[in-house]
Amino acid sequence: MASHLIQGRTLDMPVRVRDAEVCSAFYPVRADAARAVIAYSGLDVAEVLPGKAVCVLVFADYRDGDLDAYHEFGMAFLVRRPGVPASVGPGELRHAGVFVHWLPVDQTFTLEAGRSLWGFPKELADIELRLRSPYKRCILRKDGRLVLDLLVKPGVPVPGASVMAPLDAYTHRDGLTRVVPWTVRARGAQVRPSGALIRLGNHPIAKELSELGLPKRAMFSSTVAHAAMCFGEARRL
Image 1 (cartoon, rainbow, N blue to C red):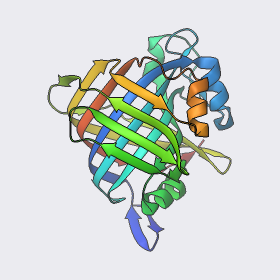
Image 2: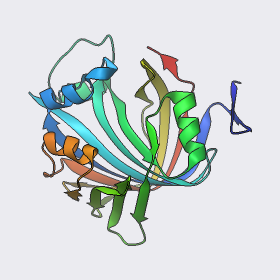
Image 3: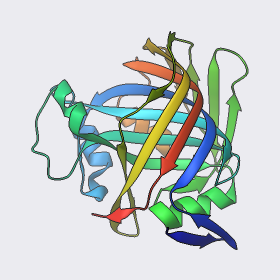
């Protein structure tokens, strides 16, 4: 079993999250604009419709896990796995991974672990989560500037527990693109068409989202009351 030393603590692989609340909104964006945003990674977006890629905005309250308790926000894109021939249409989802473009957190231990173990683009930010009502809200500020205010509405319950097929998360740091094996088990999931409201601030990431066409109607949104995750050893591409 591989292990790593982070801030004087030993972390054994795989790293586990035992309980987290996760809220997501999936937005259709112009594929050419998304390609420009992630060109540095060497990856290509998955075109789920002609000329359309998917930008995923997600916020999470990590309540119990190997990286302690913390809040996190993520901006990611569905991408085509390297080596898979390019195609267009919903079938692209079968071969898609998730490229994590930006991943602010509010605690230093997960910041260092995420960067050094997997190359996640973690930065410190002020992440205010309001999760006690059915309407889940994230207010994200970085360097004293508002990035966004995102509200996810309640949806239709998905019965029982579900295990997502193993996903590949892709990262890029220090000139290297990596792939991170990732599995998720979800309980208390809800999904609804659209279901998200977003207000952008004046931070450079807000400008990037604006250039992708946001604010706009989401394809769908989801909430998961209890998620358990497992992150394996990163591999260089």
